Amino acid sequence: MMDIQKAITDYNTTSGAVFRPKAVLFDMDGVLYDSMPHHAIAWQEAMARFGINMTAHDSYATEGARGFDTVKMLVKRQKGIDISDEKAMEMYSVKSDIFHNMTEAPIFDGVKELMQRITDAGMSVNVVTGSAQKPLIARLNRDFGQWLAPDHITTAFDVDHGKPAPDPYLSGLRKAGDLKPCEGIVVENAPLGVRSGVAAGCFTIAINSGPLPDSDLLCEKPNLLYQKLTELLDDWDKIAG
Image (cartoon, rainbow, N blue to C red; front, side, top):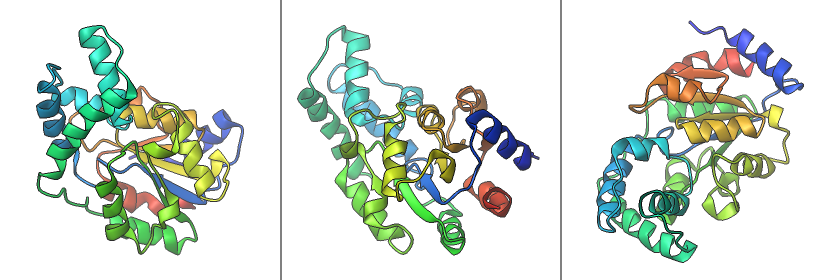
């Protein structure tokens, strides 16, 4: 069992601030939707068309970064060349097309219940995603519009530097009402996303919903780690105070 009060005390000591949450900032894929297995397949198929080898592990390890940044990194690493943003977006669009022709990924158990609890506590629900796929953003509005306002969604279009830079979550805090980092809770499933939330100064919770070992997430220093979002739901009142 995790010592939640110790995690909060440690956060206060490390940050030099007092944890007073007013908003929760969720990543999308792997946190709200069980979509990462689909993304892994789409990434592997798309990159193979361009002579790039991408494993399922690669897709999980780079999840959270902007898609075209991932393409540029892979091409540089495997072919030793720098490609333009335009070329990377062209390649990323192939991956997006494959993904959107797959069956729709389900919402994780506990997501809507947690959003209701957050709203009941007077806090705002926010999403911070590295995605630039407009159909996915439209789905957020469709599935969670009861709790999530459109102007509380941060995407790849909103920042110059994606995860693991702190910029996406700092942007999310601004959209949530110009909040301080100590007023935001980040919920992430990917190492790069956890690093982004921690770098932004937020209390960061990792949900290990994929195949990566816990150590891959813990090395990024989240304040808490759960295996399922329903476990976070069970502990919500202790965290939110």
